[in-house]
Image (tube, rainbow, N blue to C red; front, side):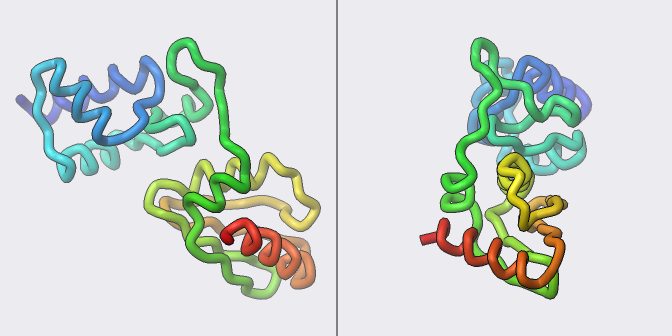
Length: 151
């Protein structure tokens, strides 16, 4: 099995809809007769530019796609924060929230969806979210709100 054929198969699978996890991706590839370990899948996901959404891995631009037969769904912000955020720290008018690997984007999307006056916007990486607030006071209020969700 070549890298090219494996990555093409992965691309075809996620074009049908998000794939919930690397384990599911591994099972789907196995059904096609392709074997790949976790490290190989992680590299393929990175090289293909797949993004992790609340629904699973998706192609860029298809972040809001839901699995066939399902409506696009994003869990509540409190659930996402409780499950994936490990800490939040203030730095002047900015907050830095640390998440588990691959979880920053769906958490940031949920935070943005709340339209809280304390948050102007977010920038999400793989495991870190930068939350921009209008001032230090707003950052403090929002940090407190997020920390309460962590309990």
